[in-house]
Image 1 (tube, one colour):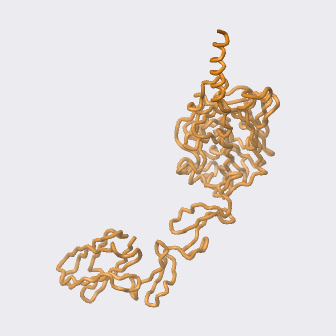
Image 2 (cartoon, helix red, strand yellow; image 1 turned 60 degrees about the vertical axis):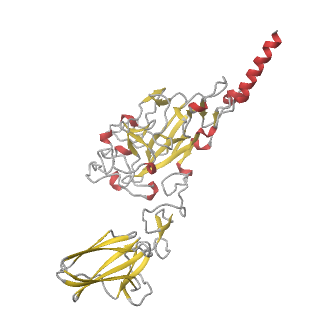
Image 3 (cartoon, one colour; image 1 turned 180 degrees about the vertical axis):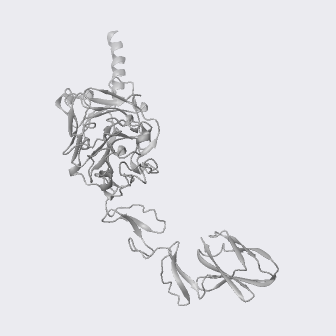
Length: 461
């Protein structure tokens, strides 16, 4: 009887253990360090926020980059696993309205002097009413564009240094929302509210959100952990605990719901082996040293936006955009020259001796007028709609005053596409011209009335 009962129990236990797989260490995809801003001479001249901000100080933002569905539990130092923040100089402290925790910054103060580049810790928040996100996930720079200029009255935080990536006036990494507050245990650092703060290390301080485990505010699931401004070398080492998605939680008693990431694994972490150790991980990027990190053209240390890599210069008339040697995003002009001047509106040569005033058009078409300029007469009103045109457009002529009207539509080679004799038009005429069978490009509508002539340009998409 005993053996009969024991066999099913062993089979059940074996089945459960066989279904369990160790946690996936890629739940934490990385630590993203973003260069948020580089202070210039105007920023440094302000005395409202602090007299200790120097030209060239760099503001770094640090994010935990989690897989979708994974949640941050806590960040901190644990026995045998110190957390540390250091700079070779000091951390910038805004002694006007700055705070040691981002969520304690009143959002109405973000546009005051240098408050927005204060040094602090956080779990997602960049103020009491904003989440912090990477600048490339922020659609605008609306929060900081109204900076009050501090003691000088000249708007601050407008530097466009390419080493900081996207300027704050274009994207400030602030999106409205109600971020969580902070729960912390242990001895919190004072280096972010001390004018001489430069170094902190602890194995008994940790912080988390006051609403439990959280995900990032956007689909990328990146959670802001801190902002640090300094003109020295920034180094840090982090330890994080992350919870797996609910869908991955299993009933096996050995199934880990928590993934533990440490800057350094110590012998106690793996003592005994097996499931007691398989949820503890260490990766090189949990420690950071700004002096050894190449900063890419988007301001991300170790990032992939390097000279020669694709980008978007925001100009629809250029192609094959890439970062140049100075980290400026440029595209090829209409002649295939990177950063060249041959763009719509600029002179060109269409190769036709019968045309004049040749210029590049949208779509990089070089065209000129066929021996005539785009002329008009004061007594005749010609309306074309729509223009540009996809297939058909309406021509309306007003003010003919009993003149005989003839219209001709020509292409850029001067070839006649459409010709109509309207006869004597007493007042107003309206008609439709069909270009659906014609190729895209520039056309010219010539309206001859009496001894006068009016020319209008038509763009066929």
